[in-house]
Each structure stands twice: as structure tokens, then as C-alpha cells.
Amino acid sequence: SQQGEEDPQALSIQEGENATMNCSYKTSINNLQWYRQNSGRGLVHLILIRSNEREKHSGRLRVTLDTSKKSSSLLITASRAADTASYFCAPFINAGNMLTFGGGTRLMVKP
Amino acid sequence: KAGVTQTPRYLIKTRGQQVTLSCSPISGHRSVSWYQQTPGQGLQFLFEYFSETQRNKGNFPGRFSGRQFSNSRSEMNVSTLELGDSALYLCASSSQGGPYNEQFFGPGTRLTVL
Image (cartoon, rainbow over all chains, first blue to last red; front, side):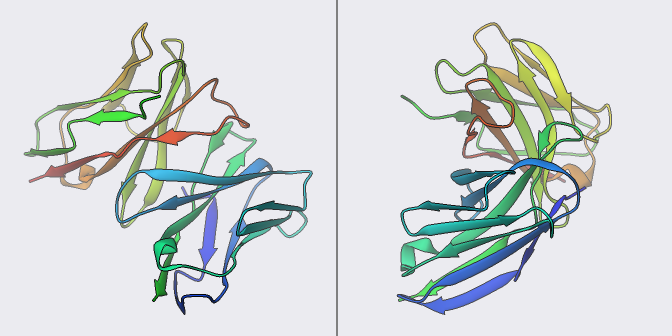
């Protein structure tokens, strides 16, 4: 069963705008990771935030984590057409010691 | 380093048949995990192998099995295929597995069951 749920399921923006994707999860986690997938291909790891961290940055990516609300957000600033992809949050759940994935947000960035 | 490779990339089988998928991890990586991706269920964890031992298992029926060889290459097998097994099967390797090791994904094997 999926432990993470992304919101929105789909997002369409213009190049240069910021894109925000949210993730909620259900159980206790060790960390939460974000991945990108281009059109049915393999996933690419973007960023990992540990359960004791609140915010993390990597280039144009900013991730926040609120363990009290069991939620995370991914912000992509100054988006580019090449950012068009599906984005998945992946909570690493303590029960089962495994990485789980949400349903993903399909992001389309229009040039 | 070469990335994770999966073979074959595409496969068509009929119900009742069995199938074996192969995954070669990044050189030096000892952990291989397998995932199933379908439009309805999303990405679901199948199992993880580390040093030839199954270390973790998701909630899939016994028709799904796997193994890992001494060179860390891994295979997964699905017996008695059902239509619902049609999916993209992804494998991911990491150096040690576990919570803090980044997983590197292969391109996947797209299985179609007719």
C-alpha cells in the first residue's frame, strides 16, 4: 500500500514560475526522499531529508518536512521545460524498514 | 561508472507463463531492490537483496520471487502470470541499502501480459 500521497496529482505552469508539490504520509519515518521520473523511465533521486531536519536545499530545489503534520513539500524555483516529469515523494518508513512511494505529481512546464 | 542495467527492456507474455527479469547493479553496490509500477497501484516495493540474502519483502504473493548472485546481479521471477502483472518493473541498487543510502534506478522492464 502507498504510504505517501502527493498533491496536486497534476500541475501545469509556465517556464520561470515556481512549482510546489506536497506530500502527506501516514506512519513514522526515518527520512523522506523525492524522486523524479521522466515518462515511464527509471527514477532519479533528487533529495533526502532526515526526520530530524526541517528544511533542505539542493540547487533550485527546496524541501521541507513537518513530522508533526506528517507532511513534506518540494519547491522547484525558476522552473524549466526540462523539469517536466513526474515527481514522487518516498517516505522511508520505520515499520518494515523500506522505501515507499506516493502516487506522484505530474508536472508540466510550458516553454 | 556504468549505471543500473535491466534486461530485457520490453517483454510480452501470456497468462500462465513465467518470466525472469535481470538487473545488474552499479559496480560495488551490494543492495538491489525491486519495485513494480502500475497506473492503478503506483510504485510498490517487491523485495530487497543484500549480499545474496533477501533482507526485506513487500506485500506480494509468492508467485513473485527473486535472488541475488555473488556478483550482486539480481533476478526476479514471476510465475503463473496474470493480466494484473502487466507493469513496469524497476530495480534499484545502492551501496549498502538501508535508509540513508541513495538508490539508483535502472530504466525498467516493461512487462505486458496478454
